[in-house]
Amino acid sequence: MQRLPLNVTKSSIITNNVRISSGIIRRTLRTSACVRSTPLKQPTVDHGYLPNSSSPITTSLEFFDSVTHKSIPAYRVLDGNGEVLEGATVPEIDETFARKLYETMSLCPELDNVLYNVQRQGKISFYMTSHGEEAAIVGSAAALEDTDEALGQYRELGVLLWRSFSLREVMSQCVGNEEDLSTKGRQMPVHYGSKKHHFHTISSPLATQIPQAAGIGYALKRDPNRRGKSCAVVYFGEGAASEGDFHAGMLLASVLECPTIFFCRNNGFAISTPAAEQYAGDGIASRGPGYGVMTIRVDGNDALAVLAAVREARKLAITNSKPVLVEATTYRVGHHSTSDDSFAYRPRSEVENWKKTDNPLWRMRRFLENRKWWDEAAEVEMKARLRKEVMAEFRRAEGMKRHQLGELFTDVYAGEMPWNLKEQKADLARLLKKYSSWEPYQKERAKFKGNGEDVL
Image (cartoon, rainbow, N blue to C red):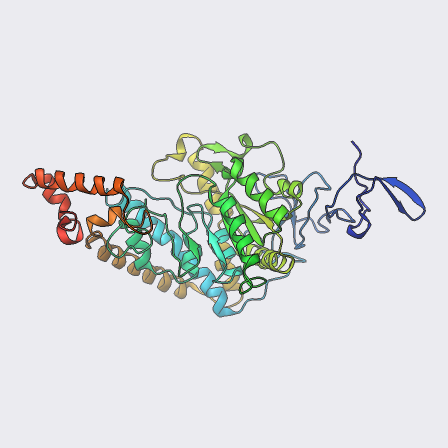
């Protein structure tokens, strides 16, 4: 099969089999795709490679829609010690913005530590942390507008925190009490959702949010009030990119030209399956060109690189009304979830080494300190304050009652309750009456607002 020559430009691509350029007749494939006129630039300064990767580090913020060399470079601004790389451009930020970025990143592990431990105490049923991925999550959130539609996988609490989702709302959802307005206690913990914050409720099935995001992008494109103003952004791991929904979503967005950002957190593991056993190609970024999607790989542990890349991705998506793929390479320091023991399939020493050598929080802190925007006193004050606030909100949340028991049957269908739910509700009422004097039932009913009387 013949290939398009690399010096073909968008204006010169035609749908005929023969193209005449500079007096030379060349054969081309039938296509309407845009092919780069020159190969993607190789780094001019040797900054080395990403850890455990053949991807060279680059300071050039450059997107691509065709793979023109063996290894896709990874965009980086800060080195592992928070120093700006030679040739790199620091994205436009001021002290207030930078401090908010770091504090939001730091709030994530404070929440993760508390909620992971209370799950181990049996106070909540499940939890998933974002240890090691704070820069990818919060850095990308900071690059978006709060009105952009966000669809998370399950580690994206940092997106909501950046958008001022309160600790009270976080705790209410995880505990499932009467103040959980997003899921009313009917969803698993960490399955957040907020219409106010333009954050679509998380679903347990893997990758379902990806084609949904393509559809949301298409809806934004068709809405005259939001066209050219908002985009959709969908988060997923590299494991989810093995699902058919990933390919369906990419194809839909590329063909319909939807302003959707596909943000892949490539953290190296799909539960216990390492990335090396998930795909043979060059990560997830190599798949973008196959769908004609502008793509970039970024160091996901560099908050400023993620910020710059997603800012530019958003601009591309909205201006051109087309999708963009961002692959953020990072490392999952925590276990997959509270149902997982990652030390069964990776050495503890590997995890500890990543914490020390490529820590996203340390990088951002050092950058702030180099700018004289942060110091040890600020660090101590922040950690004490965040810990106190997190613990106070958890204690409050766990002492509250759940929603009324009858809420189990609401919000399933619009309009009048259908016959099958009426039957189920009546059956529950019968059981509550039958065992009304049984102590275990009495204890359970006491956990609900109204003691379950609304069902009787």
